[in-house]
Image 1 (cartoon, rainbow, N blue to C red):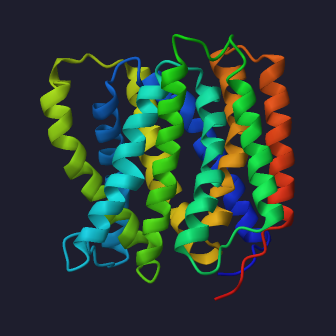
Image 2: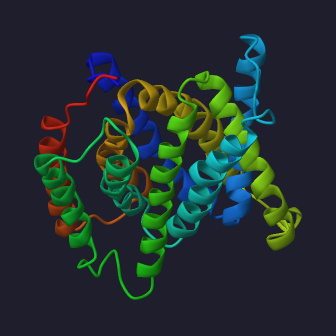
Length: 295
């Protein structure tokens, strides 16, 4: 792993913009699609450009080779499960709140990296930054305007989804010597296989009547926020490490709030703004002390 340079930081910001915009698109998609079907159609849309890229670049897709168990497990933990959980949560909470709640990713990601990697150990100052950022999330649960007795469980479901992203990211390190496009495509194909039977059995998608707006949002989620974004994510993960990659979750709320306020007319309270400031302070402390050992 190497310390991030300007290009690495630019990719991280681009990824944050894409994922920050994904939450209001998820919200719009939930108007017409049930969560498992939403996740299924999203990964189907994502797999199409990924398969095309692999074909044009003559990259072998290893989804069903001897490493199939890793591809399957990553597809389950890194795509299928979190996509469903986040869709369930975002349907009942503000889209920008879902983006903010994803800021819990560095906390669980750093803890997992500390125990399961050699070069990404927690230090006192890194831990302080993560905990300060997470305290901003806790403050949100005292804001009854955006989190209350009717939707708090959906907020927790969203946090659980972000935790699965961390687990999936850690598992992805097992395939860091594989080609980026192959890993992204292979895990996406496995996520399709996991989601398809549950969608057909539990949600009967043929009975739905999706709107054009919901379908366009789902198309964006698949091609841009999944296919393209996961290629960027895997590149960051393998070059800069899990802890650096999870910092994208600190940037996502900024863009999530912007998109939610201006495009969805969602109410922003003073506690939301204070929480965001606390999270940004956590980002500063964490990034200042996040010196990755080069392997």
